[in-house]
Image (cartoon, rainbow, N blue to C red; front, top):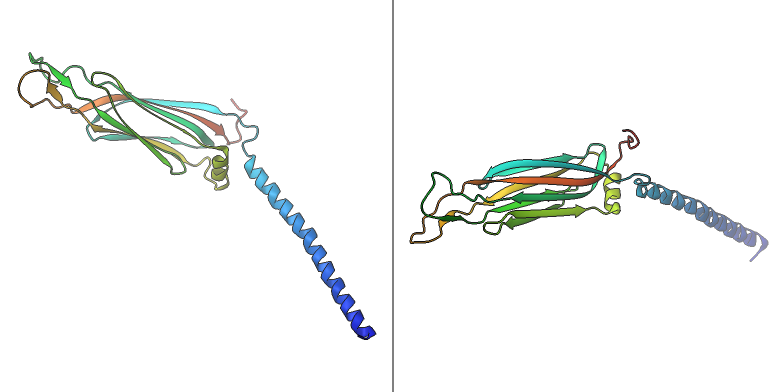
Length: 208
C-alpha cells in the first residue's frame, strides 16, 4: 500500500467516525425531546382536583319502553360515574276493588351505561315479590385512559349516556282459587340518580 492509499483510507475512516458521532449526538437530543412531549400529555391532570356532579330523574315507563339521559362533557372530563335505579312494584291491582286477592309478579328493568369512549356496561334486575328493586352500576376510568382521551382530542367534547328500559311487567295473578287468568300490569315508575366525579379542564378551575 503506497502513501496515497493510506491517506485515502484514513480520510474515509475519519469521515465515518464523524458521521457516527454526529448521529449519536443528534439522535439522543431527538429522543429526549420526544420524551418531554409525552410527559406533558401524561401530566395534564396535574394540579386539577376532582369535582362532583349529580342529576336525578323520576319517570314512568310502559312495558318495553325506554328512556335515555345524557351527560355532556363540555370543558370537563369525567373520571367516575355511579348510576342507581330504584323502583317499587304496585301493591294494589288496577281498576275497582276486588274481593279476590291478587299478587303482583316482579318487574324487570335494565340499565345501560355508555362512556364517552364508547364502552358500555349493562345490568338487569328484578325486584323480589312485594319488595323494592334496585340496579347499580359504577365505572371508574384510569388516569392513563383519561390521558388517551386527552391526546385524542376527545376530552371536553364527549357524552356519557344512561338508558333505562322496563323489560317486563309481571302480571297480577290470583293468590287462591282456580283459574290462571290474571290482570295486566302495564307499567311502572322509577327513580334514577347519576353521580359523577370530573376534572374541569376548561381553564376556569379557580373561578367560582
